[in-house]
Every structure is written in C-alpha cells, then in structure tokens.
Length: 133
Image (cartoon, rainbow, N blue to C red; front, side):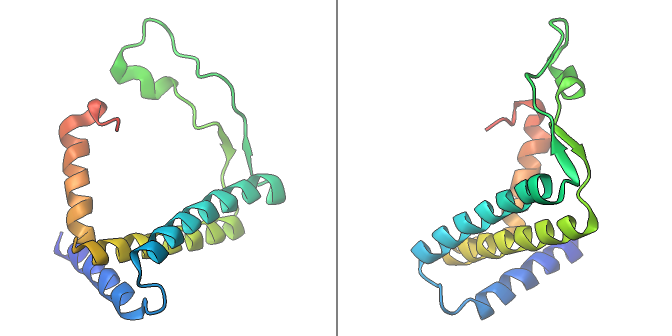
C-alpha cells in the first residue's frame, strides 16, 4: 500500500514541478477536458482507422428474471476484439495525459491523488452495486 501512495505522490510532485505554462485552473480544466477528448479520439481511431476493435452496439438484452447482482453478466461493452499494440500505446499515452491534468487539478485544490483514489475505492467497496453516480 505504501508503494501505491509513493507512486501517486511522486507523480503528483512531478506534475507540480513540470507544469509551468498552464497553471491557471481554467487552463488545467480545459486541458483535462481536451485530454479526455483525445482518449475518446484514440479509441475511435482504433475502430475507424486501424480496425483492431469494432463497436457492435445494440440494445442491452437483460432477462426480466435477472436480479440486480446478475446484471453485469448480461451487459455488453459493445466492443469486439482488443486494441492492437500500436493502438494500446496511443490510448495509454492519451490516458496518461488525462491523468497528468487530473493530478494537476488535485495539486491546485490541495488534494492528494492517492487519498482521492482510496476514498473512491472505499465508496465502491462499501456501496457496491449502489455506487452508480
């Protein structure tokens, strides 16, 4: 657990050290949104450009008798296949940029990325299926 905290802390410190030009909260908010859009674009390009994954979307089909705890077994991601190594690399790079600006937002607001993640983990584990927000 200590290694995870150090990893988050080291990452957050590096972000604070190297984020020089875009230190305004408005810059960071818009950069974070742009980074999220680039994640979306990387996944879309894996579908439309490379073709290593496909989207096969249809209405979710859930039996009426399925309990709430069984829903996961009947829900589809609508993805077929797996990203190729090149697309995985691009998606990971874009996710990294998104995490960079998330850490920058934590820095500006005085929050610990590790503590935020720990709290969210606790919420998910405690609320389980009811953690839908």
